Length: 305
Image 1: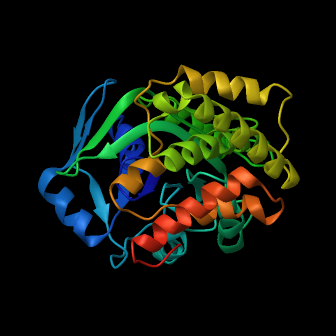
Image 2: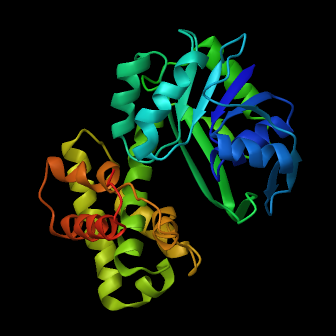
C-alpha cells in the first residue's frame, strides 16, 4: 500500500512516521526547506510511546513519480489547503482515498469539489505534538489517536484493508463507523479549547480555576454547539457534560495548537474555526473570540487566511 503524507510536521510526520516504522510504503510530500532538513537529519520522533528514527521517502511538488497513491493523509493547516490541492494533483488517481486530519468541517466541501465524494473520507486525530528547533517531532501526551472512516458509514473492501494495515501501527489508528459524528464532536471540543486558551493567552489550568474563565468555557461550548447544530451537526444530549469532563481532566499545562501557533507568531485558522460558525448564528462569545484572533492576525502585519 502506497501512502502519501502531505507534510512532515507535528501531525503528519508523527502518524506517517508510525506507519513507516511498521513497514508501510510511506512518502512525505514536503516543501523544499523541509526536504533539505530531512535529507540531513532523517525523520525523528520523540514520544512517551517510543522514539522513532527513519530515513523517509520524500517528494516535492516539482518531482514526478511513476505511480500514484492508495491513501493520502492530509494534515495541513486550513489556510494552506488550496495551495496543497495543486501540489497533490500529480499524485492522486481516481482510486485514491484522501483522509483529511484538519480540524473543523469546511475543508470537506472543498476537497469533495476537487476529488469527488467517493474519494474523500472523514478523519480526525487527537495528539499534542510540535516541531522543535531542529525539526524533530516532539509528542508529549498520552493521546496519539487517529480515526477515519467513510462519510456515508459504508465500508468497502479497500477501506477494510486500509484499516487492517493502519491498526498495526504503534499508535491507535482505527476505522470509525460514525466518523462524521466524531468530527463534529471534536470540532465542538477543539473550538471551545482553542477559543478560551487563545482569548486568555493561557494554558487550560488557570482558566478553569478562575470563576470567569470557568464560566467562559461553558458559554463558548454552548454557543458553539448551537451554531454547529444549525449547520447540520447532531449531538447526544449529554455531549456538553462529556466534553466538559474531558476538558477538566486535562493537565493544567495543556495548550491548544492554535495558542502555540500564536506564541510562535504564526497564522491561525480563525476563518476555518470561528468565522464559519458565525455565518449561520450570532454569538457573543464566539464573536469575541473571532475578533481577538482577527486582531492578532492584523497585528502580525501579514495577510489573513
